[in-house]
Image 1 (cartoon, rainbow, N blue to C red):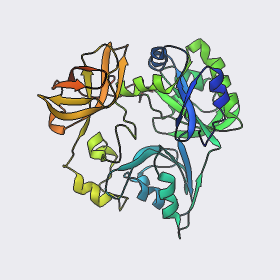
Image 2: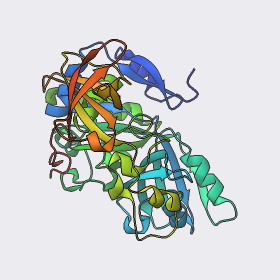
Image 3: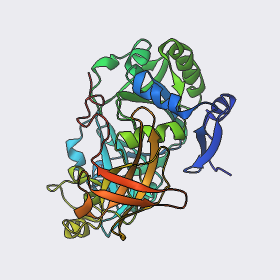
Image 4: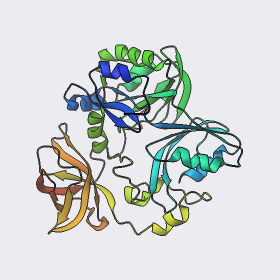
Length: 366
C-alpha cells in the first residue's frame, strides 16, 4: 500500500483511473479510454496529470547554494532566482542515483524536485554542521499541464503573463484566484507548465482547469498515455534509461555536467569514466505492428549489442518505437538489428532520438 496519498487521489479515481504505485504514492496508470487519445491531446490540444508523487525538498539558509551545488553536476551559481535547471544526481562512483529539477526560489532558498532516488537523504547528510535547513514537502502538490493549448488554458486565468514565461523559468502568481508557483517545465516535449499549489487548494484548481479546458480538448493523462509521448520525444526516465549503472555521458546528458564548477558528488569518478561509455541511449524503429517487449535483447549476427529500455507504439507515426541502450559503436542511424523478447521477435533499425521535433521547437515555443 502506498505510504503517501495525493489530495487528488479521490478526484482521479472518480474519473475511472486504474491506479498503480510510483514513489510511494498511488498514481493514474490508465484511464478508461484509448491511451492514444491521451497521446493525441498532449500533441494537439492539452493534457493534464497529477505529478505530486515527485519528491519535493526545500533547501534554505546561507549554505543552501553550496548544498545544491555539491549535490548535482550543474553549476547552480549560474541558475538565478526565478529559473530552474535539470540536474543529474550521482553516486560517488560517477553513476546516477537520482535526477530532477532544482528551482531557485529566493537568494537562500532552493526547491529540489527529484525522482525516486535518495536526494533528500543526501541533502540531509550534507546539512549536518552547516547553516542549512532541509525540509521535505508533501503538502505542495503538482499539476502538470502540457500541450500546444496549455498556454491558452492557463493564461486566461492566471495573474501573470504566462505567454512570456520562458522555458525553465517560474513565477509566483495566482491561477483561478489561488496562490501558487507556475513553472515553464514538464515531461512531454511540448510547450507546458507545472503548477505548484497547496493540498488545500489543489482539488479546486484541478476541477476548475477541467471545466475551462473541456472546450479546448483537455484530457486527463495517465502513465500509459505519457509513456508514448516521452518515447517519441526521446526523454529518458530515471530507473529506466538512466540507472545506477549509467553515467550522464551514456544518456546524452554531458551538457548537464559543468567542467568549471568546484567539487560535486562523483566528480572525479565521472570524469575518469568519460570516453569509457559502455552503452549509448538511442532509439529503434521495430518491424512490428505493436509494442515490443520491455527488456528485449538487441543483437547483430547473433551477438548481443543492447536492450530495450522503454517501448511504445506510436499510432501518430504508425511505428513501433523504443528507447534502447546500445553498444556505442552500433548506435548509428540505420544499423540493422534483431530484436528478441519473450513475446516478440522481429528486425529493427537504429534511429536517432527524439523521433519527433528534433530541434525541440515546440518545447521552447513562445
